[in-house]
Length: 383
Image (cartoon, rainbow, N blue to C red):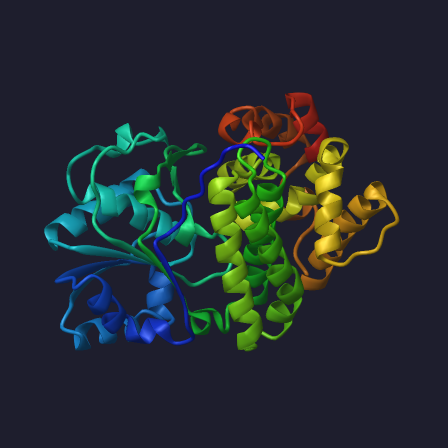
């Protein structure tokens, strides 16, 4: 076993209904005078934000809501949110929503201090200033953004950039399963498979895989794989919802330390070029990347097959059983399985394969080297 480090949030609270007592939680932990809550208009419209606001007000905490976060948030949105934080004199930032809102909240917590420009933060380890306290409240079980040190921002029409720094890791993550009740089945499916991909790719990460990330990845996959179908078919099942949230958090903590690889590298161009939701993009290429990786990662895939108690006499049989099981999950939850089903033409595949080669931050973590020709073949298998 090589030397390793493992970093995660300072505190995790898993409690049904926790969002409705957010004022008490924050008052006890941080005693903030003014909170900026970063979210999106959809969650405000659904009424999910109202109990949080009431709780904060009851605790004597002033609050400003920034609800302009969009899917694949832009630099302009981040900067506008940061300016709102400055103008409101926020002393604590709460990210409330999916990965987009939480990613924006991470950067706002840093930018609100006015000590460093966003343009200087892109890349790995480029955040050098202090930040405001940061609490993340996920409303989907997928990204794991509540426990990661990564924020992905749209920087152009088809381009994204990441800020990767322990400085943007949240102080606290609050997991309230009641917030995910009623989430549509197709969103539950896509985000759930996204979380499963995080666990799988962390477990097979080529560079920073370690015993702690492995343990979290295994437990995450157990929770997610055993509950995703129930959560999709019975959206009011709190036990399944809680298991999915917890599994997504564990998967996030795992890949925050043992980074993801080629599945995400091939998924990002699908999101950037065709605005396919991130979880669905991952699901579309997952089995095909795993088949490509199998010559280098079959032992690890077989171990995950054992975790899920799948049949197989040897490593190769278990690997094939694992991939087949993931495909059966996609079938059961009714998610799209082919690129052609989401508006990608065969003529687009070479362009996408070129884009993959730009994802060097991710490809270096993959257990098998991926060439542009390999990427094209994987896309063709997924088409």
